[in-house]
Length: 274
View 1 (spheres, helix red, strand yellow):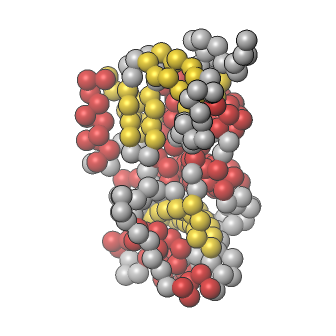
View 2: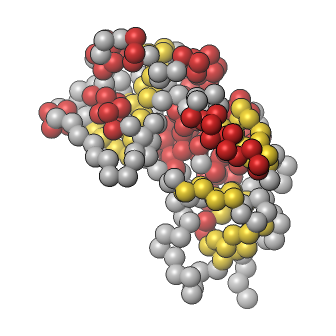
View 3: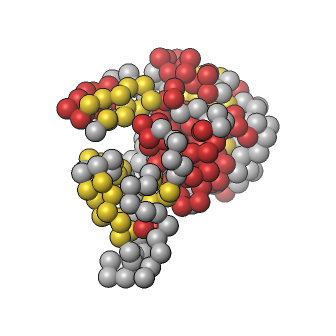
């Protein structure tokens, strides 16, 4: 008899990094999750009545957590806050730049504020995101359409470059800008956004030879089984803001409306009530 870490009908959140990697279907125990399964993984989304997943791919969470809120911890919250706390290990007083003020970028800002960053600079072409970003901790806003050169502007704003930058869009041009706006000698830039298939990144070797570092962050560098329940606890204790990021609740037959809202930049995250 094998003892599982979760039982039937217990609330769980999925870990996209552990969903099938290094697993042997003949050996590893699988769980049958019912109804509320909503499994995202790098561009593929499925709404299902039932799903078979390896046990390692789910994390048990507390019973009193509202699932229409904490479901977001299964990706966006952990990815954004985790990139600051786990991947970059941003220290208090650091200058941080965030490219893209969507669901991931706002959580990066929230994480930067949590650790005590000094300047938290948001970069986006949508001025409608400014007030919400300020609520999460943004101190400065840059619209690339309103400045001649966004890299030069950030270099001046931060007295030589940011200590850390995070690209949260999946645009290879922004990835280069995010690297090149960091400080010589110690600047670190993290790619979080997922670019289109076949896209490549480039920069001049001089940017790296002078000490900048270009890195990636998946699921915020968090270990899903142990860190996700802790993040749920922080939300329940009022230490993390998720409610303001859930801008719409939709029925399943409105799911296409959710994509339209996202494309128009009118939502941060929509939750489908199924």
